[in-house]
Image 1: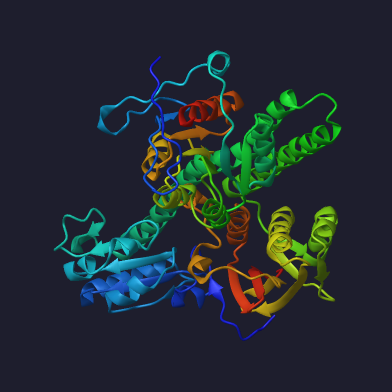
Image 2: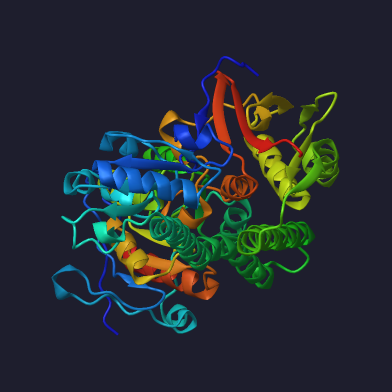
Length: 360
Length: 172
């Protein structure tokens, strides 16, 4: 892997909030346009509400606009501060927002000066964050439902339709055409396998999302070995050669989810890694833990499509992207506190990677 | 039943063919309020008017589906030109005399709708869309792209053969 290549974070992650990412707690609190009295009360309230969090004070709306974190609180003062924000920031997903000022009585979350009591404000801050979190979860769950209703249903219909058509071919085959019978039987078996695979993976992703499992210490080497055993047939079919690292770290994660991640990335490499896929699996330490990568000698992805390489599962219903695999990867990596990336390492080289926290 | 005849493929002119527009759910009115030709029961129709064999460009990226549909239509006597993607389909259409397009909509290099628009504009071809999406808006999108039919997967084989047979009868 060419370590000097620029890494393109997937569009679905939000790594750019400096106060959040600089702090393990990943929570930033922005003060914007507050009067001196409001600022003083808000600061005391924030310390009371989030004693262990970092408070980041900004004076320009632009800084909030540019940050893309989903877990921040913006405490705004005057009308200009509120008006200066776009719907992207205030909407969902975006910052939780609390407004402190008498000139915005039309804003529901507005807290008038007579209520600028630190314990009261602290409760308001916590409620605003909780409300935003619930709204975000609601958006995600509704998106998941739409994706299942539309995209997953669509993707199941392809192999299902294939079985349906093939069964019709059987009826019309000339008697004794054994070769065609075997071909058609093989098609039915393969399509049934595809259906089963989609159902299995969607089940893992939805169950993981609805009922997350707490990460535990996982030996990544064991996970990869198990996946390679499962994929032995496909590996042989693709005539792929895989280079593995000599040692593996332990990560904080969920083993069954990691198996789905690795099998999707490896299948991706089998399919697109060139005629004789030479695949390299590697890892390296990074700030939050480790970055794991699957590199191949495929032609890679057109630059115009890199931003939708890891489409969020909840948005699949409205996107035209070819496969489901990288979307499953994105969701499962995110649930374990990591991020997905893609980089083109050379003219004939691509690298898909993901980060995960180190085992605690 | 009133049938309308289609001219044979206009090799010198890319003007789109006129063909009744209908879906697997309903018949859509043609532009100008004209109603499409109703699709008849294939066995009844074939008993009175034998369907001709035509040249079909089959565009489907799912290998097994492509092989299966190709085999089905070949048994029916049609000449099939299979394509795995839109780029290949455009190349085949440029190099061969095609009567009808049968295309999936989720292709790897462009959507089936974009492909159909090009095939219709350049070669005047009519088409049947095969799709896992079957909402009203999907069917409408197919109609706007120039498909005469939108069949939702799993596609009824009888229905597909019926539509192709009807089309074959109209162009001959």
